[in-house]
Image 1 (spheres, rainbow, N blue to C red):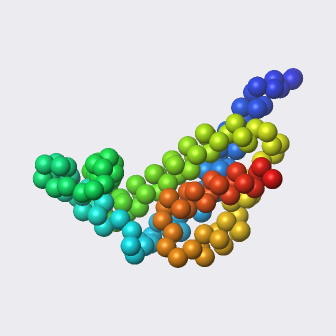
Image 2: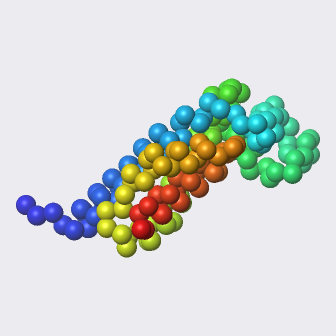
Image 3: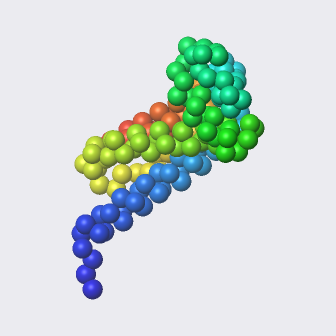
Amino acid sequence: MTIHAPVLRDSVSWRNYLLFTLCASLYLLPFMRIMFAGSDDGTLLCGAERIIHGQVFARDFFEVMGPGTFYWLAIFFKLFGVTFLASRICLFISSLGIALSYYFFNLPYLQFVPNAPVSSLGGDLIRRTLARNQPSYRQHVRCITSDYLHGSLE
């Protein structure tokens, strides 16, 4: 029985996505229980709660941020209730989605490197990120994906 190359390449591709998702999840999960000072979390939570209670953005309240974030978080509040856990589930799914889309759109660059190391998401990444003063989820995602690409392109 012979294995065709496209089938093997597809399984390696899915395995890389799965491994990247697992590593990114393990990296992001410890930060889900923390609200950083100076972040926009409170504004987003209040805006999403207002939407849940029937208010409409730009008619009943206004923020400088666009309405998409409020409505996105309001979906999670509708599904899980207005809780801290619901906001963290939203944050986790958003962060993981950003990391996976960044990985997907940079995949053409990774094809030039055989056996791109997923292990670059390891200790050095965590050490450098934790050394920052107030990391937000955007910084975590940027750090995850840029270190992954940087480590695999060297």
